[in-house]
Image (cartoon, rainbow, N blue to C red):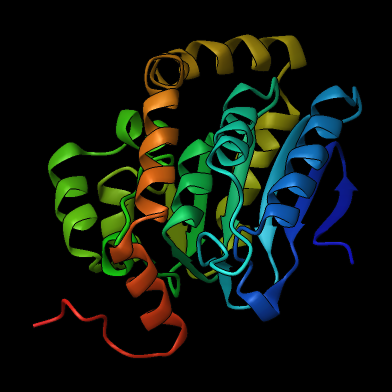
Amino acid sequence: MTLIGRSRARGVETLCLDAPERRNALSAALVGELADALTDAGEDTGVRAVVLTHTGNTFSAGADLRDPPAPEALVGLLRGIVELPKPVLARVTGHVRAGGLGLLAACDVAVASRAATFAFTEVRIGVAPAVISLPLLPRTEPRALARYYLTGERLDTAEAARIGLLTAAGDDVDEVLAPILDGLRRSAPEALAETKRLLTARVLETFDRDAADMTALSARLFASAHAREGMTAFLERRDPEWVV
């Protein structure tokens, strides 16, 4: 079964997360297929930019608890988005949770419809937003991120834009995207690649410095007793034992 839809129009490659029955959770299979699709787009001279979008009412619910990707695979996917020599834009018309926010942060531009919501829910199942911090920490307002990392509270699009998770939001996400895509189509490919390299240098420094530590932290926490309880409680639709 194909988990990533592909289409192209006027030099823009659209990659669509297409596992709505699992809320586009980041399974090992989906992460691998998306990484391959991004590599293909990066190597294709006919592609000027990539739009990452989704089917269903959820952009991504984060890691698939039944088939989670290896932390190294998630690091590779996020770095692949950051390093791709073409702009990557997130087009969001639904909800984004946990690891899905790592995808958003790795993209160069992220736009959403006003109906979208966002939350770092890792702490509520006994883990931490470790790997996704690699693109998030350099691009997001620190004090706000501390609050939302620690509490798992839900954000609306206005707050997400204020703290740097989103570039823009609107009632019609395609209207918001239209002038951005027009600008990219008018830009020279080599100039786009070099400009993206300039913009992502600090993010890639974070990957170089912290990826090994974040991978180890993620693996340790996912193997912990708290994570087992948190994930079991989530799947059983009950509160975990630590809720007071």
